[in-house]
Image (cartoon, rainbow, N blue to C red; front, side):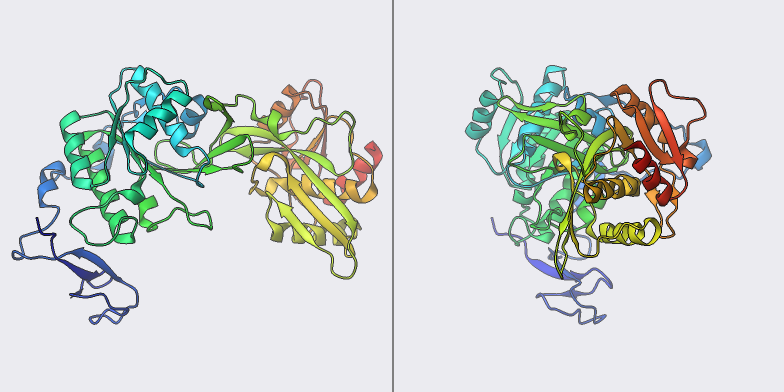
Amino acid sequence: MAKEKTQYTCTDCGGITPKWLGKCPSCNAWNTLIETAADSSGPTKNRYAGMAALAPASEVAILSDIEAQDVARTPTGQEELDRVLGGGMVQGGVVLIGGDPGIGKSTLILQAMDGLQRSGMSTLYVTGEESAAQVALRSRRLGLDHSQVQVLAETQLEKILATVDRLQPAVVVMDSIQTVYSDQLTSAPGSVAQVRECASHLTRMAKSSGTAVVLVGHVTKEGALAGPRVLEHMVDTVLYFEGDTHSTYRLVRAIKNRFGAVNEIGVFAMTEKGLKGVSNPSAIFLSQHAEPVPGSCVLVTLEGTRPMLVEIQALVDSGGPSPRRLSVGLDRDRLAMLLAVLHRHAGVACMDQDVFVNAVGGVRISEPAADLAVMLSIQSSLRGKPLPQGFIAFGEVGLAGEVRPAPRGQERLKEAAKLGFTVAIIPKANAPKKSIPGMTVHAVERVDEAIGLVRELG
């Protein structure tokens, strides 16, 4: 069977050319030509014609007249994954999960599919990178000896869609989307055109049939999902695997979720039997020191809806004429800004010092509420004196030296008190109206107040 001819269509003006050009001959726009199937049998032919019945036209309705319904969710059996998804898999939802090679994407998805199958849902695991025997070998290694998950080793989109139409599974996994290709296009699997085309067809299938689809995606060397950016716009949920492959712990972060909270994270530990959820992630991000040490300050950060305690470590050492500024898990530019504020408004100078800051456990912290903890850890390392036992801090610091409030401060304090912390320095706007049992809270308005309090407490 001869493959269908292709053409190149401009995404800006819709102009068509038989071969790829750097500049569209119609509108003179650069890099806008994409490969599409050629129209070989007249203007009525189009490659979506076979799917027209899957998306019938709907009637126009008034927004206030539309009845809103809660979305039903099916738990996967992995509590941390369910937390990130917003409670479980959604009928007709499309989930895209990406991460570095070997970090555990396929392992987690296979465990989740087995949990869904055991709960009574029909599942189909489509593998494009491994054979069915390799998937079976991994399932044995994970202790899923009697798993009833259906496996299909296939990369051609048309055959995959035909199998899904025949089996009618409730959940389909495509591992990975970069290995799938359509006969409609001549470009190689993994190209921009193929990824866009295949993801579009799988998304249409999910929305029309109610089958939940999970797409596993490759990432580039910069850590972003490979393929066109529109891939992330197509799907309902985007998850990223984070963490070092040499570390035991993995983080799964939701950066987009139409059915739940964004920036929610799930914490997993890699074991011989696969990935296991960590119910108390604060424990893995806190180093166990027998006695308080200089340069260590515990931060209460907020990841989605979960308050989490993370230890911030700082090391300040003489650096010579060209001092270094290095941060791991925190923004390096923000570290330079905090050092300038610390010097200008608190009189703590680090101009001739190397400053190294690390968030323990491999976690990445992006919220500005970490500012105060970073500054106090730097000041503690510079003085060589540890912060008090059971001490925590959080708050954003502005360029004028003011300490700004952090969102949901009460929940942060309660989480710290639950884990046995007894002293806190927080923004004045976050001061609790009622005292928290077992915790002494110091509310400050400026960074110099916080530095002075630490010196008094120390």
